[in-house]
Amino acid sequence: MDEISPADSGVPDLASNPPTLVELFLAFAKMSLAGFGGVLVWARRAIVEQHRWMTPDQFNEAFALCHLLPGANIVNLSIVFGGRFRGIPGSIAAFLGLLLPPAFILTILGILYAHTGNAPALQRTLAGIACAAVGLFLAVIVRMMIPLLKRRNPVEVGLMVAVFAAVGLLRLPLALVLVIAIPLSIVLTYLWRKRVAA
Image (cartoon, rainbow, N blue to C red):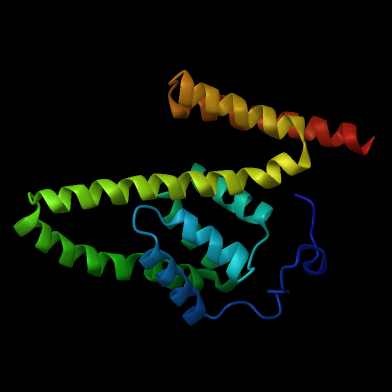
């Protein structure tokens, strides 16, 4: 990965002034509370646009790493992100910020749903919320693709299209696609950078 200086990327120098444990906890708590139906949209907005803790490319790379780890991607992102700036305490702070507020709210909603879950008005409300969540998810996918498309790297775009076709259209097992795509992407990226550098 090419090094990007803070001055070039618009990202402050976090090495000398990283977010505190409280800032990590509160940032991820806000993301989780805003992100019913999916936190990824709000995580990217907070990390990249609001706090400018990462560039769009750095966020994409961290999120890609989190896809390869077991567990929920956004939970993995909180642990990786918190650990990047504050080590194990940072991972714990971001993780707790992400999970504690919604766990509390979900417990209360679960109790209420057990008593009123069959009400038609509630069913219509939940259907509307699901549609909004899908729209937000599609919007963040487009934003995450923009840095890839701007670079006009045929290897990155080709691999993205191939993986989408394999998993999304051909319905091939994700594990099989990853076993093939990961080493292939490493080799092709290496060859492409070698060719560009020559």
